[in-house]
Image (cartoon, rainbow, N blue to C red; front, side, top):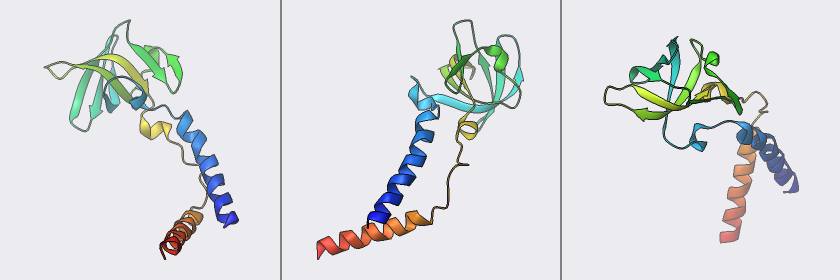
Length: 135
C-alpha cells in the first residue's frame, strides 16, 4: 500500500509543475477565441478558427503574451497558434484586448510523462479499498 501511495505522490509531483507553468487563456478575463494566424498586417491579422477565417484588429493598447512573457506584435507570424480575448463586432471582426501566442497545442508538453501503468494499478487498489470498507 505504501508503494502505491508513493507512486501516486511521485506522479502528482511530476505532473503538477507542468500544469502550473502552462499559460492558460482561462486565467484572463473574457472568453478566448482560438485559431491559427494565416496573414498579418500592421494593425490586424487573420486567423483560421473552427468557424472559418476571422479578422482580428489590435491597437497600441492590446497586450501580447507568449507563455508568461510579454511580447509585441512583431511576434505574430503565419502559422502561429493564438488565443484572442476581445470584443466581437457584429461584422464578425474581433477587436483584441489580449493576444496569447502559443495556443493550447503549443503550450501543453507531455514529453516528460512516463508509463502510466501504475495509474491503473492505483485505481484498482482504491476500488478494492473502498469495497473492503463497505463490508
